[in-house]
Amino acid sequence: QPSGVRVHAHALGSGGRSAGAMPKPGTPARPEVSPNGPGTLRIAWSVPEDADPEITATTIKVRIVGSQRFQNYDHSTGKLVNKGGGTVPAETSEILLWGCEEGIAYEAIIAVMNGDGWSDMSAPSLPGCIGEVKSRARPQRPGPPRLDAVASGRLRVTWTLPEACPPIEASQVQITEVSTGLTLLVDATNGKLISTGRTTFGASRTECNINGATDGVEYVAAVCCRNAEGFGEYSIPSDSVANPLADTSGMQLVLHQGPSTEIPIMEPLGQGQMKVRWLLPDGAKSTMVKLRRVGDNN
Image 1 (tube, helix red, strand yellow):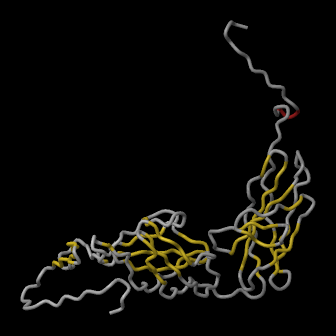
Image 2 (spheres, rainbow, N blue to C red; image 1 turned 180 degrees about the vertical axis):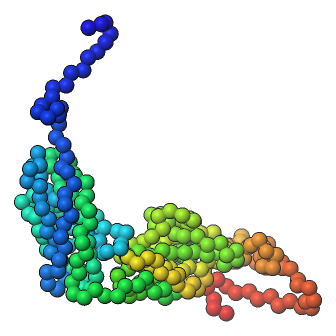
Image 3 (cartoon, rainbow, N blue to C red; image 1 turned 45 degrees about the vertical axis):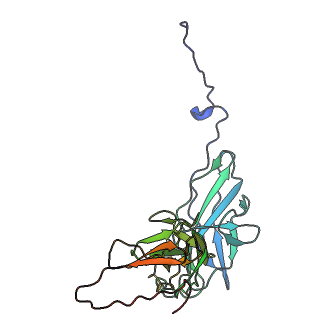
């Protein structure tokens, strides 16, 4: 061979495959889902017998029809889990799934594994339902959430989930600055205020902490919920709260700042004093100024 040229040789087995290469399994046929008594669904499937290498396990995912979120089947408990979940041994080709809601249609997908890895997920099964299918609708708007000022830069929102069919899968929290009308969402991973991103909380969450709120700015919160039919309407806003600004004299002020001069502007002067400025409307003869401590109702 010419100097400097390197030749790579591959031993080929039957069918032209590289020796030792193990193809992952082909995509399995879709499973079957059927009712099997109160709160229980039966999921059955066919395990490919001619796979080489042979199939060693099956994984199952289940969701409510129309949902964006699959849950994993855990073979050790026979229930659905959000993360993890035990696989099903290859010799098993049907399972009973516990804890399903009656009147709700479910669908399942599966994948199988051999020594080379996992197959692609199957097509979804036909829907399976326990009893008569219930009527479905988007969630109703929740009641007003509770918004609390926790500490400098921090707020806390708590809310209650309404009843819904299909059941609620997620919530979204919206925060509005009272003085400017600026509306932002709460990041579900770190509690920061953002316009887009991961802004949905799982159904198990009915409380969140907000980081990065501006001290001295008054906020309100609203919540909406999502199920397999989609998002419902936002709730009525919460009562407004603010983390106070403290001047050097210890007086606590809430400053309403905004682009409009129609909003009074409060400036701390120190020594227990503050200045309030506002725009006097045309034809006005007098002005009434009212102050309140943060948290007071009057």
